[in-house]
Amino acid sequence: MNPKSEIRNPKPERILVRGVNWLGDAVMTTPALLRLREARPDAHITMLTRDKLADLWLHHPAVDAVLACSTRDTLWSVAKKMRAGNFQIGLALPNSHRSALELWLARISHRIGYSRPWRNCFLTTRVPPRPDAVTMRKRPLAEIQELIAGPAPVARPPSSRAHHIHQYLHLVAALGANPEPLPPFLEVTEAEVAAANQKFSLTSGGTWFGLNPGAEYGPAKRWLPDRFIAAATETQKRANCRWLIVGGPADVSIAAGITDSLQQTFPSAPPLNLAGRTTLRELCALLKCCRLLLSNDTGPMHVAAAVGTPVVAIFGSTSPELTGPGLPGDSRHRLLKSNAPCSPCFLRACPIDFRCMKGIEIEPVIAAVLSACASRRHSQDAL
Image 1 (spheres, rainbow, N blue to C red):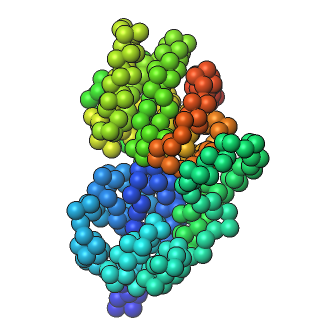
Image 2 (spheres, helix red, strand yellow):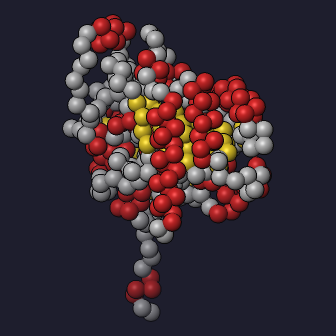
Image 3 (cartoon, one colour):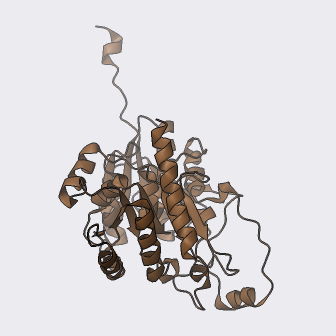
């Protein structure tokens, strides 16, 4: 008997990735997951995620399995689910105390995460903070009032390596992965696109532009609805497009108001309002069908970029340098922000006069949408 015939391949390394809880943040982890797959091609990688995000990882090349949990799951029940997977490596993407504790309770022998005093005892590999990292600190009201009362501060914008995708790339580097950035990526199949087209009757609708007027995080991230209406109206006149309005259950009211106004102006080419009516997979497919997306800084913005759709994004209380769509510097996207001295404040609601969003006028948004549309058309013609 040939001795080599008795040699069995070892079982694949089992890695548990404890995912983040917000849609946009989850998309920003995809470059790190792709780098992890590149470094450990034979590993079996399981994503632990909230059930609302579980379908995001369907078809993703970096993820072999999904372990879903809900807000009803206790710390102990989550740890029990993880323990059943017999994982050798646990990677905590969030900075929370709980994410590290879950890995420890699951008895995973190698536990990796960012070093923080309140959770270091639960980690075996404590990754120090990145030198380029910028803390998204919420400004207190007193600081905001001081900024708007004094002369405009001269602030240097953060470097491209301050973007949040580097937070996760730096973590997977502890497992030998390449920390250089890749574009965020989500896999959407042709069958999913065809099914969405058929279900929502997009095939004969003309050129669709996506519109995402909400933001789950809070009102400080939402451009004014009347300005969305004005920008969408003028854009449709100039570009001969139709608007596909998307969003979650919390965005239904805003989306309905915008829909009613656009229907009155364009009765023969009305918008299609799907806010609160799609699954996560359908949202991914619909955004892939759009020529571009006009959006606030929120989850669908990141999804659109990750499926290859150009984005025009409006930033108020947050920073495009830290959480902009796609790969930092991607010329397909247009990012707009005002020069309000108190921005970014990273607050959910503005404590003063909402000057960061009121400072973004309608015409620059229209110009950005038309520019992004023309840029994509030219790139497609060159293929």
